[in-house]
Image (cartoon, rainbow, N blue to C red; front, side, top):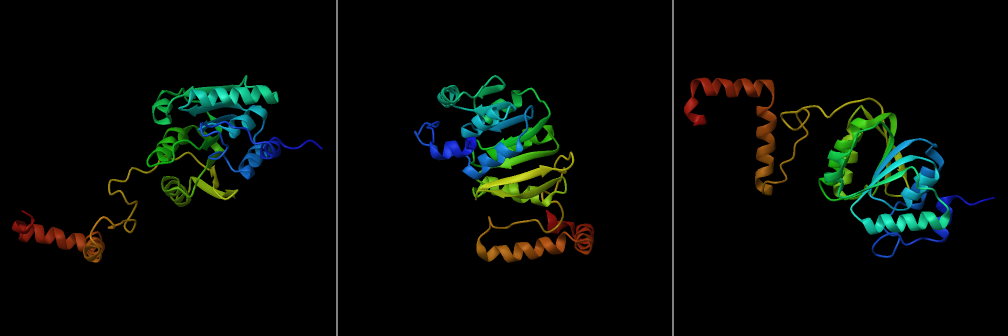
Length: 238
């Protein structure tokens, strides 16, 4: 029985990245998930490039990858040629995702893999540009979910009815399904309702006071008190 491509990579890891090592790529379990899930002809896009690019190419996906490294793209091409993997339906966009995605010609996507820049706010920007173009019931994979910016995105998606966090593969790749089309609500208060606030930026001795003030004056009775004071003692607000 022929081994899966992910198993072949695990047994003989190619050097695709500038460090000369495979480290930084998807976990083997995530590569196996891609190999088992992606169907020929799926429209896919990833930020970052590596073994996942080869797996998606081997599965016959109509694939785009955004990577800032031309050398990395060349190494992937060489490895694909060595293994007999066709890249006829793979397009490399060379550049940073926050520069390339605004210039990207949108198309409907079956799967998006975010594994590019991991520092804040880049994973969130990548999601913002690509989420509207992911099909309903399409897959969103978020790699390195233990990193702060990615973890924030996972937490947000977990709270939205338009998305369903289905689980993890390996120990760091989160699988999310898009259930409906939904842009993030325009929330002028920035907290999607009372309660989702943080005063961590304040010195510790001021946080409790700030939280109490916020809770009191963001309620209807509290706002009525503020309006009354503004009316009868406007000098207090000067």
